Length: 109
Image (cartoon, rainbow, N blue to C red):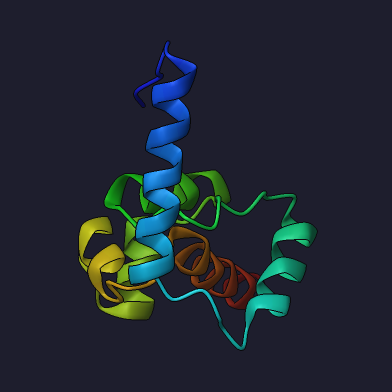
C-alpha cells in the first residue's frame, strides 16, 4: 500500500478514487443490509465504498475470513482471486466482500 507523506496529494488521490467510484462502480445493492449484518456478526469491517475490487483485496478478505481459494472455486468456478474480483467489474470491493461473507455463512450453516 502506498502511503502519501503529502496530505494535499493524499486528499487529491482519495477524491479522485471517490469520483471514479461514483462514475464507474455500482453502489446500490439489494443485499447491502444483509451483508452489513453478516459483517457485524463476523466482526469484519467492510472496505471503503470507493475501493474497486482487486485480486489483492479479495485475497486479503478471504484469508481474513478463513476462506480458501478452493472453497471459492467450488462455489463460483473461479480458479483465482483475480478471476473472482473481475467477475463483476463494476462492483466495489465492499460488495464482493459481501459475497464472500455469504459464502462463509453458507459453509458454516
